[in-house]
Amino acid sequence: MADATTEAALPPLDSINAFGPEVLSDPYPYYARLRAEAPVYRDPHTGIVYVSTYDHIIEVNSQPKVFSNKFGAQLRSGSVHDIDPEEAQIMAQGVQIVDTMLTADPPEQTRYRKLAMKAFTMKRVEGMEPYIRQVCNDLIDGFARRGECEFKSAFAAHVPMIVIADALGVPRADMDTFRTWSDAFIDQLGGVATKERRRECARLIVDFQRYMIDKIEEKRARPTDDVISALVHADLAEEGDHRKMEYNELLSILQQLLVAGNETTAHTITAGLLYLIANPDEMAKLRADPTLTPNLVEESLRMLTPTNNMWRVVKHDHHIGDFPVKQNELVLLRYGSANRDAAKFADADAFDVARPNAKDHLAFGAGVHHCLGAYLARKEMQIAFPIVLERLKNLRFARGAQSYSFQPNILMRGLKELHIAFDPA
Ligand code: HEM
Image (cartoon, rainbow, N blue to C red):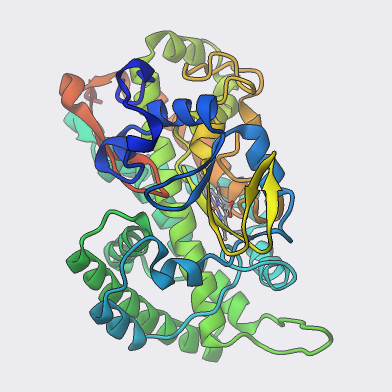
């Protein structure tokens, strides 16, 4: 498979361009080298500190006072991309959003997170179950007779997008535009977009903000039972000072809710199916014992790790293990590598639906920033996989080895497409 470890073919560590398309399309051989040779490593090309083992990442995530999530300013300052004045000018036409959850530190992060958490409680997500089931079945109705489809665009990408758009309270008719916006946010962070694409992303992001401001005003005037209404009317209790959130706070939260859950969930559903088709014994194991479904979800998350990397900024001089790091240094937590760490997961590159500790993966992060949508994402996938397997019989690749390819991106990992065939129903 495309992401199997092939250490022998690799050149010395310091000659590798970690952000080059070769590493990004299959980072696992590079990760294996990092874990073995330099578990905490300052890349001489980028100056960024990479943290690649399970234990070191846990160490960093347990110290939010030292390792900050306020990486937005650092990224915008040209640490990763050169600054493009035209892109900056386009962004200046929109709202300068503030750091809220993912890009904030406690105590601010905690305050915003508490409000957003209310929208995705276990009780609320449990109540969504019949509805998510319906969404999955309706999507499959659309292509089951064809006997063939590109699975990501026909199914996997729609499930989380419909669920989050409905939860936010925006019309399904706007779904395609939502996807365009979600892609723009991801490409802006992805580290491989051209200058032209980044400018286009900036324009799209400003459009997103204008659309959302209209929705915010609509829900302020006529609240309905949805997340935007709840956030607009929520009380951000700040040290005894009660107030409603401003545009720059609301937009930041809405942007995270839109982006954080879409591609990640879509990629995991797509990759899970890829791993099952590529590993017929695992498919058979699962069909024989459907109670393994929750573990299939965890193992797919571990194997793919859609949020493959995440930034931190060092607040003051410190150590990771015995490796010294300096104030303001940019750190990249390599979650994808931690999830293949043999010290934690036996035979870590193998896909095993019955893996006893699959759930220990770091695909949802760890510590104060642990994914806010983990319960919802798990629920969507625990519903989607059995429906796909039940309704699409004799699943196989439609185009042999050409059926799938991974898309290069620094932060996200996932398939561009997955062409499958099955018995028409
Ligand atoms: C398979 C699906 C998903 C994966 C793999 C994933 C992964 C992650 C990871 C790794 C983090 C922690 C980032 C860090 O270390 O700083 C995170 C945070 C977050 N996720 Fe998810 N996520 C998923 C689905 C969702 C969904 C469905 C939502 C929204 C409903 C969501 C909303 C968020 C938010 C708001 C944060 C920031 C939380 C905070 O900083 O307090 N995610 N996610």
